[in-house]
Length: 306
Image (cartoon, rainbow, N blue to C red; front, top):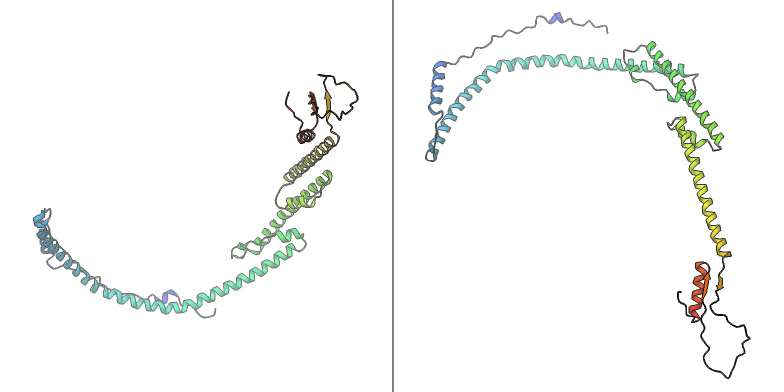
């Protein structure tokens, strides 16, 4: 900026001559005594039901006096403030003239500061890219810009130091991550499981010991489910074998001995056949006993519990 800037001293001639006004109340003592006597006349006055009209009249009279005093106050204040209002109006106009010059200067300064900020941002980006150039993809992708670097305070030297500090921290993080990946990969090989899914769990923020506990639990759950399935199949096979090999064992305990003489039908004897009773112990599966019961019912064989 080549234009000369006006020094503040060049407006030292600016001054204001004013005489503080004195407001005098004519006959103030007499007015004060009159008002006090007037107020004392009605102070503490008690009215009964018959005196409501008188009370209203007193109230109206007192309000009228108060209004007269306040109106005079407003009138004096208005006249008293006229010179001040005129003075403020003149100063405000002069201030607006100065503000018309300040506004474009302010905008120019903001534009220059924005250009400086963009220039510094570009310089910082170049600095960071140079320092990240030979780093791993993990470091490049994890690196974060500090917005405070764009402020006027931090120098480029300070920025470079903070960039290097962050790079070193990210390198340590990467080493730890790689170590954890090796731990989980080798552990998965040892217990014979695919590592890919567990590496994703590790990447989501779990530690290597936590992931190994998850793997152990998963294997235990799988083994339990496998044993449950084996037990189920064994039960099904056992039930099928029992159903196939089961039999009904009928044993007759001698209560009466039936002679083993050949039966020769006597067609001349048309009497109903003799009903005989046998005591049997029947052994078999539920399905077999149910079938036997159905057979006896269908053929009219009477059965009762003994």
